[in-house]
Image (cartoon, rainbow, N blue to C red):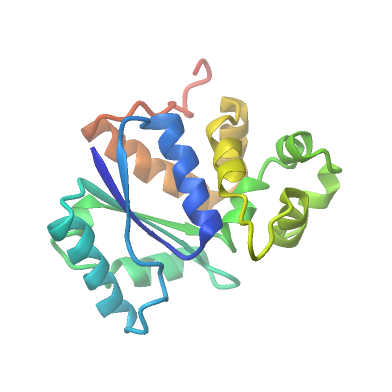
Length: 196
């Protein structure tokens, strides 16, 4: 399976890589343009990304991961999905983090605390991005993508369940991935069942 993706930043890319390594290890990931980097209108940018990944590079599915920043994530997601070419929508997963992907990563502050050896309270702010970047020692020159991917890949099932319980936007993203996994060659943990 070929998974095309377009994200806004390096943490988003690392997050997706961690999920891919966890649930679909044999898939090939094909990177599209960074969202917002083309200078085009959103509709044209998305059409170009879709053309590149779906038609030119023969990806089976395209995963978009973006940040709502301070806006309502559902509104931003709906507005952006409406700009996707109609023929691509059945093959697209559109994740929209509440504020940013760091909010998803810190949705279980005890897990991040355990992995970074920092107090869990550091990760309980509405926007824990600064605390997360500091704890991970992320810098302009070292985005720590391998370490972030490992956090996601190695998270206990209970951690992923807490992400779902704590973040409606992650729950929506997970549900989209679950639906796609039923049609593809991925073995995604069923986080809705208590025994998984």
